[in-house]
Amino acid sequence: MSRQTDRIAQSFQDGFNCSQIVLSTHAARFGLAEDVALRIASPFGGGVARTGHLCGAVTGALMALGLKFGTTRTGDKEGKERLYILAGEFMARFRERHGSLFCRELLGCDLGTPEGRQEAHDKRLVEELCTRLVADATEISAEIIER
Image (cartoon, rainbow, N blue to C red; front, side):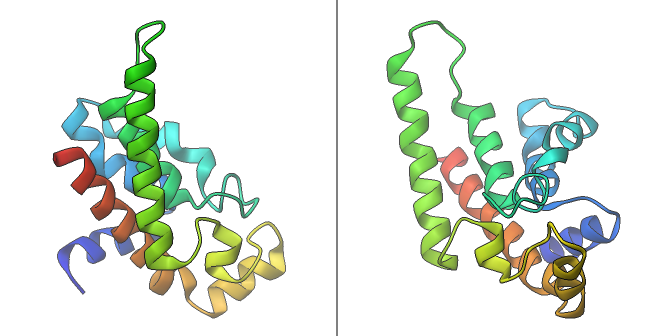
């Protein structure tokens, strides 16, 4: 395992979700305290509160893009458009690597049910698949932020 995947795996073992790990990885570069990033991203794990919708790694990366490129001025249509283009680029690149943006499709099980959570545990999906999804989401979003 690389240093990054070791850190991600440890964060999962510590009880954090995909979204929390991705956003907190980016937090310091924007002056956002890690504990604040962890709280903000808390409800987005499991495809938003275990609904299986948009992958938590994706939501964490989108929040990081918002920290860098988000708009704060009324009527900033150019800024909003730029962010949407960059967010679209991120999502296209993530989908190209993994085939989907949706937690339930990526994992092949429903984390919203005890049976689905047991299946994910039995198949070691967090350790094997989610670690890779978080690493890729962090890498792709960092590339977009840094250029």
